[in-house]
Structure formats: C-alpha cells, structure tokens
Length: 113
Ligand code: 5GP
Ligand code: ZN
Image (cartoon, rainbow, N blue to C red; front, side, top):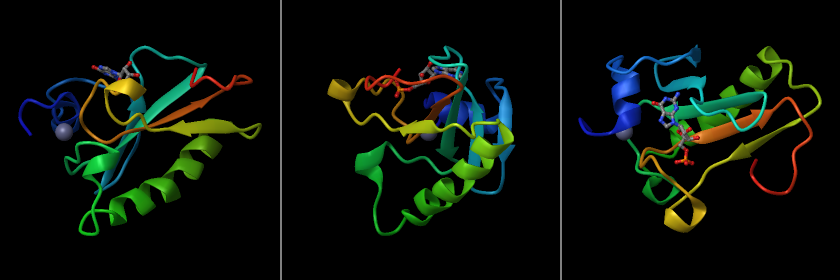
C-alpha cells in the first residue's frame, strides 16, 4: 500500500530504529514511546489491523508471537511486558497496518500506557 506509513517504513522510505527483521516481520522503536521500552512489531505484508486477519494471512500473526518473546528477551524485559493491538477508532488505532505494541521497562497500569 503506497500511502501506508508502515509500508513506507518497511520499504525504507521512512527511517526507523529497527530492532528485529526477517522475511515476514519487522520490529522497530515507537517514535513516541509510552514506556522505557516501546517497540512495534508488524507484518511486512499489509494487513489493515486485527479485522484484516483472515485464514489466508493469519500465519504471520503466529510468527509475530514467536518473535515477540525473542525481542523481549533481547530488550531485557525479564520482569514482564505488555502486548497491545489497537483495532479501530475507539481503541485509538492511528495507523491502519496491523501492529503489536511491546511495552515494558516499568510497572504498567491497567491503561495501555
Ligand atoms: P496505534 O495508535 O495505531 O495503536 O499505534 C501507532 C503507533 O505508531 C503510535 O504509538 C505512534 O507513536 C507510532 N508511530 C506513528 N508514526 C510513526 C513513525 O513515523 N515512526 C515510528 N517509529 N512510529 C510511529
Ligand atoms: Zn501497510
């Protein structure tokens, strides 16, 4: 999707602080961190959000959840962390490309951040 911010980050048209990359997944630091560690994990294939996950593309979601613990370990989040995906306007989704926030590095409240 040429007008998608995260597709532009995947393409390298917008720079990002990458923490993990493989053939299907990219992880990079959130530009406005809500916790000491705040990383976004995204599929390289454009999926609009949670509602865009289907039987045809859901394999990458399982892969993302294999990658998340590796990132958490590399970031030293042994005391725990939160994984969040906002879906739609009431949840505050601002970028319509599926992404999972990894938040950690401090004790988290029941709010997302
Ligand atoms: P959402 O609000 O859709 O759940 O999450 C989108 C996230 O993307 C926000 O936390 C926001 O700070 C982050 N973000 C927006 N634009 C950029 C950008 O250009 N680079 C990076 N690294 N993060 C961004
Ligand atoms: Zn996209």
